[in-house]
Figure (cartoon, rainbow, N blue to C red):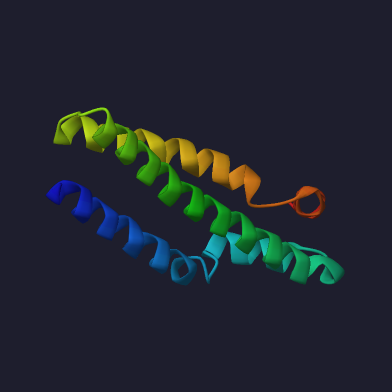
Length: 112
């Protein structure tokens, strides 16, 4: 039961910290915004930030889901952590594609 409380606290902290982490773009994304057509710069920045937020949110949700399944299945600590890692990886991939909509997909494809 103590492991479940610790894991719940870590997940809660991650969810609270994810909007802070997603507030800025890295140098590669800033260069992509600068290369974009002047009329599309705001849209490219917005879409890149939304994709990053979706990716981070998916990572946290996937890790929590994987750890929860590991705990419910009665696995050891190692198996629970393995499930959390696999869930985080899957959530990151799924969240990256689900963070944007078709309009953002077109804007980002137009401004590579």
